[in-house]
Amino acid sequence: MNSVSTFLVFQGLFGLSMNAWILIIVMLSLSGAASFIFIGAKNSGQFDDVEGIKYRMLVEEEEELEFYD
Image 1 (cartoon, rainbow, N blue to C red):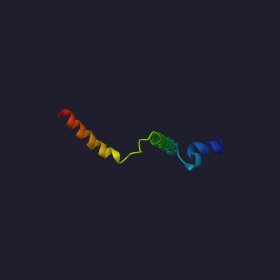
Image 2: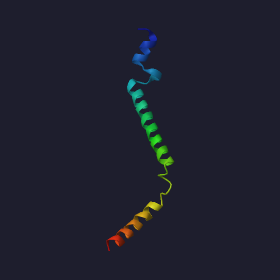
Image 3: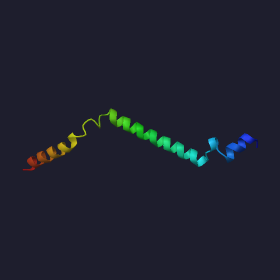
């Protein structure tokens, strides 16, 4: 083994172990997935009316009571 490959095997790239690199890759993957999910939800309009949902719940309840009377 030469000195460069010995360094990469025992010391890791930039001084990080293999477990640290796996952790970084998993962290970046999950963060990227969460970002794509948020951007998709934002573009589909799921965050447009955050105040109206609590009032819509009350209106549906009143209409439901009128329907059953």
